[in-house]
Length: 72
Image (cartoon, rainbow, N blue to C red; front, side):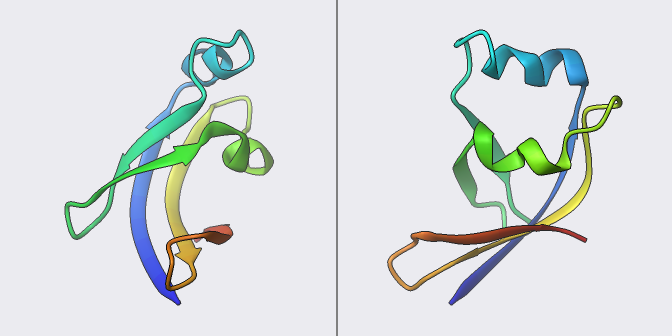
């Protein structure tokens, strides 16, 4: 398994672009400076009235297939 750590600070308004069909994924930059494109729908459980804020961990398998996303 691979683990990627990153911070997000996306307003609620900006995240709503996903629902209008404008944005299907979120580009994140990990602590190791890797750029990862994650489907915006994976962040839905973490959306609040403030948007997406905080520290996250993305876990993938050896083939970079999504396993889970966690809020830390």
